[in-house]
Image (cartoon, rainbow over all chains, first blue to last red; front, side):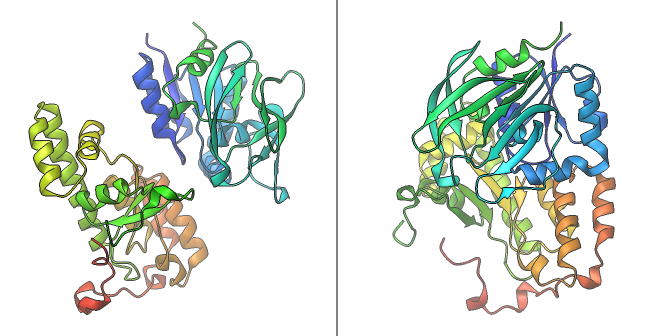
Amino acid sequence: MKVRVGVLALQGDFLEHVQALRELFNLDVVLVKCSSHLRDLDALIIPGGESTTIGRLIKFKGLDEGITDFVKGGMPVMGTCAGAILLASKVVDRVVGEVNQPILKLMNITVIRNIFGRQKDSFITKVYVEGIGDVNAVFIRAPGIIDARDPAKIISYLNHPVVGRVGIVAVQGPLLAVTFHPEVTSERKLYEYFLSMVKN
Amino acid sequence: MRKHINKWVFKTPFVNGARNLPEALRRIFEGASMIRTKGEPGTGNVAEAVKHMKLVNRDIALLRGYYMTGDVESIYIYSKENKVNFELALLTARLGRLPVVNFAAGGIATPADAALMMWLGADGVFVGSGIFKSKDPEVRAKAIVLATTFYDNPEVVVEAQKMVSEKASMLGIDVRNLKPEELMQVRGK
């Protein structure tokens, strides 16, 4: 049986994830827009986009509860950029501070939105991720992970010239928060790492 | 390119309007990061946006057909006849879609308009006066977001459309009643 990976398709760059998964791996890719789409999935990806928008749309018809149940069942979930924000238990904005946006609170991490600045402060760089190696990372108005509490663990840091040392990848069991965009490079490493969490 | 801004020198992304594929590809060549259908903005009349989206789709299908049959020569002729960069035409043919995101815009006023444009292949929608000139902007904005996101789920689109009243929609303008100099879509080909 082919592995079935769902990509949350409410808003953001889900299409890039779908294309990357289809081009790099031999698996079934499913667009997820409601709880019933989670059925029979082996893993889920929450894409980048606008985290408040995705957070609000996820609450429509209880998809947030569906995803929480999916995670309780031990299924792997990867959140990239806005997806990492949605997985976090606490989110703060670099400029406006405390924000009251709906998030899933599935990982014991604290995330700062827009930590590197505005859209024009976006950048591409090479980063080292524990257990994966060097990865080309595209940061687009990216968040940063400033705190991880057990059992969550930060497995990659970036030394940014302005912001300093910032956590950029965190893992907690089968949950993976990535603050950059693996879907816009053609690199397989991060996907391979995530897909290795899928139970056989 | 003389009338258009060279967008490659800017760090801020540009979105440009287009009525058809050659126009879109010329803007992308100049550095546009995003495209929107021109439609006829400010009218609350979605017909022009539909027309522009269909024109884009028609040419993409044409190029895709050439690509699938290995007819690179026809892609070259298309690019030459339409004053389009060949590499961009080839890329569009290979992808079977615009190389950048394409937003539907220019006359979208209701949730049903938004869902229709998504069905036609838009990656998203821009709504300006359709919301701001309506009598129910807050609920309308929410309803249009729902109809755009769940455009492929008819029940949700109906639900979103029921959130707004057609009577509260902005007063539409018939494009045929606009004077030629009042049309926005003919600016910058």
